[in-house]
Figure (spheres, rainbow, N blue to C red):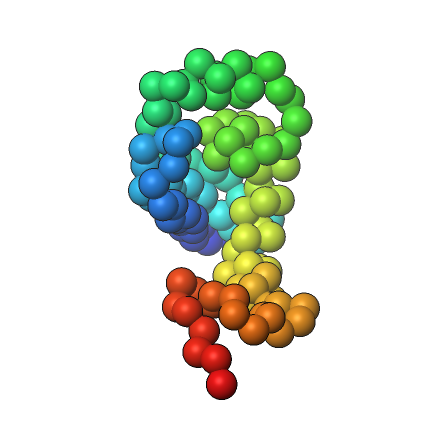
Length: 116
């Protein structure tokens, strides 16, 4: 039998109009052959969006973030966990690289640029 490991995916959010959570977490048990979702923190929907979120989740069988996060039996869930763990976790900067340098006068990371 293969040893079982624990994987926790934590996603951090700024304040937004859709849900109140600052951090949402999905936990997986994994071994050499599979990932199995075991737990996720419930999303605390904002009152104005709660009905819409419920409708979208239950009327859509397509892959989206909230279906992946909320439904432990969602097809493809383990594949997403594997991509996050093997690709994003090991090399996150590839997703933040700029194709061209910022233009003069633009802001980077909230800091104003200094002109010469």
